[in-house]
Image 1 (tube, helix red, strand yellow):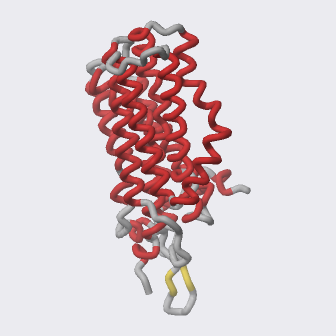
Image 2 (cartoon, one colour):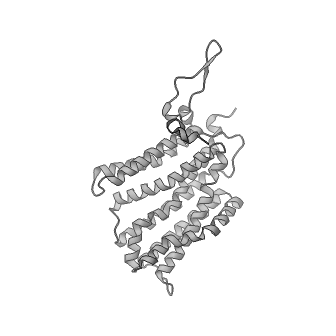
Length: 305
């Protein structure tokens, strides 16, 4: 009989791969950091600046179905690799255009940035088609919970990147230096998607078991991550040791699902089953940890249909 770690291997790999690959789809959240720098560098109007971060969404009704067909035909790893490569390359191109390193010729720089942002969005759709659909195939009984965790981590990872930027480079301004955030997101897009492509299974297995303990623990980790990110945004952010410490905690919490995906820890975290008494009757084991009983224990409405 295969071990518990072996039978949960594919779902664990799928969950962690999609958890981190999905981070790349949050790159548009960083626009608030570098948007002002783009406007001041190129002299764009407010309307032209807004178009860079809004026009791409109009492509969703076309790009989303096409991205889904690509992922279905070639597998989720191909979708992540292609989407990550497209997104990272075009973010570097946006940086080059905004800094003047790449002349746009007869095309207005604002228009060129809108076109680049549209291609970035298409890359994000390819990433989404793999990162948000694959966990459902491996967690059929808990598909709602696993998708909500992956989606929640997208926004929270954006907060981690923004707060880390503040610690490393200071509060964003309209100076050209803020444009380096585009390069940071390009590195994140490539790194997380290539990591996800290396880990993600091509298809689920009928012999796999859903590691419920991993989802329960990740729920509490993301809850702590949310609280820490809110605290980091409320404390003074310039030269504050408290802010630096909170951002360090954010990084540790954001990376903590990686060792949990290894598997051997999960049997220790799973709720203990009933043990048989000498008289033949079963009684619950006292080793069950209430904190890991799942979000339903603390929030009963989550278990309601």
